[in-house]
Amino acid sequence: MSETQNLQDTSAMTAFVELASGLWINQALSVAARLGVADFLKDGAKTTDELAQATETYAPSLYRLLRSLASVGVFTEVEPRRFALTPMGEYLREDNPFSLRYQAIMHCSDCNWPVKGEMYQTIKDGTPAIKAVFQVDNYFEYMEQHPEEGELFGKAVVGILRNFCLPLLKEYDFSGFTKVVGQAGPETVSIPWILNNNPQMQGVLFGPPPLVADAAGYAQSEGVGERCETIEGDPLDVFPSGGDLYSVSYTLIETPDESCVKMLQNIRRAMKDNGKVIVVDSLILPGEQYIWNKWLDVEEMTLGIGKVRTEEEFKLLFEAADFKLTRIITKEGETPAVLMELVPV
Image 1 (tube, rainbow, N blue to C red):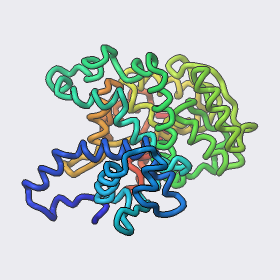
Image 2: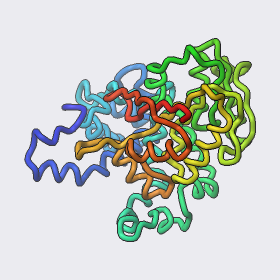
Image 3: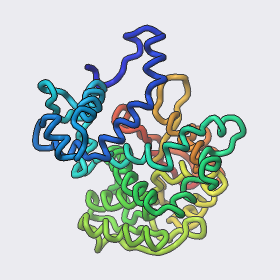
Image 4: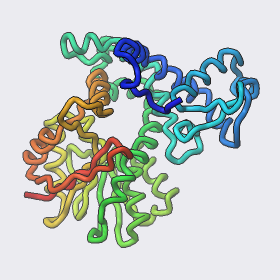
């Protein structure tokens, strides 16, 4: 079976039925992630009975789940009722540094799954679905009230940032910079990677105390703790000064336009005159072709936390903060994110 569904190889009716049933795949992938099936397959193929014993599940039901996920390329049935991992399935492994296991779990969490069911309300009157379900304005407010969801989100974000951001950072030339500054949380993965690959640079991670503490621990684990300063602060108040490079990864997507401009203006005041900003974020391209980022935008809409922007929408934000977009780096097919370089006007 192909690892992706090719809707051009079937009738319009069949394609529609498969598309309308996509929630089955979403939930099945989440269940496999929660059970940790991939971790029990990391050393080789196992039978359904062996996996059922390891995951404490009912073998006949587990087989039907794995058989279905094999049809979309997550597992492969190497012999009758004996399964192994595929390259796609490797992303479900807990010990994979680029694991996306927690993203799969998060999409079907106690918060996210019922919110998806109220998308109709968002389209009708513009109210985020999360407000109709949980009486909160957005996902961040929900996480403040439900720490377990916040912990899940944090784990998911680490995997997302490694997979989405690092391929783009590898394409950027950091040789002329000496100090990179960014927010703890969104930059906790990126800045240690930059420092590890550019020994001439120092780093600063700042933000609220819990995120700063996590960032300090991560930087230490990556071997750059001595070169990465951590500071408590609010990006909507002031950014640490003196950097010649400021990094903004997956922050604007979850921030209203007005706050985006304010944040960028704070960076403009803090940075050196010859400094630059790199923005790593999702981008919606023109045209009606399939782009995963369009669906991410729908997710953001229902959760009330932001939106995925077009290039023109980004340019308006940058210009309002006295920045000019000089280039966009893409890795099409490898990451849905882009890297945008900004310079002061």
